Image (cartoon, rainbow, N blue to C red):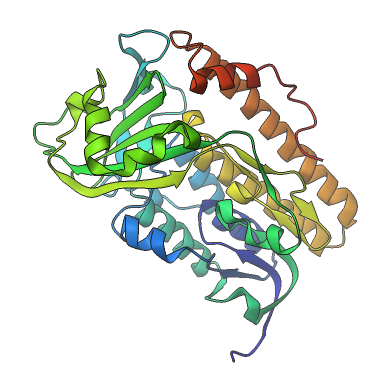
Length: 363
């Protein structure tokens, strides 16, 4: 049995939200230990070590990382790709283009998530954090749950995540000849039962994702033949993919919006996907995780420094509630902009949900 380690703050998780929380605490002079969040063995086997879903990063993410971590290497051009445009067939059959070259925050990014997350963790460790394999060996004054959708700390305290939809992603990765491939860009295409996403990723590969609701048959698309058949019926995504060159076959991933109704309590708070997981259509997951990780770090540093915990946590919960409310508003606007299949179950559900109030989404 490992000896118990004592620390000011235990952060459960090692992803962007965890690292942003940790670096903020360390810079405030607070001792931090990070513990790797448990991951399901079947997920590791299915996806392999060479690819981790969640490669898209919104314009401005690189600026946020440099400000928070003081590091320029996390966005090394040799490790990641700049996405110069997003092409969308959404609300119309033809592609509309958003050119990121003219975005004041710069281009979007297509990350090697394993390399990106590893670099952030290296910066945190260099700043003085300890990393352990088992959170149970740590005695902490305060715990931050950055364990992702599993929300292990919150669940251990009896809290559950509330899912607002059943969105599921079927993710596959194809090999790609970069010499003949077009300039890196994101393509999103709406279809009658959901939507598709594709983008090149580092390593001469292309990620291809089919999004749909769990109960509307999307699970069946993890069968490679059915996935390729559905891909072949797309107008814009399919022609970009070599359907005979899969390096990672279709696998299922949860992709829906979730939130903890109680993202904080005495001695703990949740951050990142553990607090609120966003629909990938928003393209805000990594950026929000970084920004709210910084907010979580500031909140906990204040508590460790003597601020009244109930008031500090109430302020944090209110801030997170505002973030989630704004996200829900923007997501509803995006989904209701697609009217071609308004009566199809996937789209009808989202139109109905857009009428729900946005206030008081956390309490």
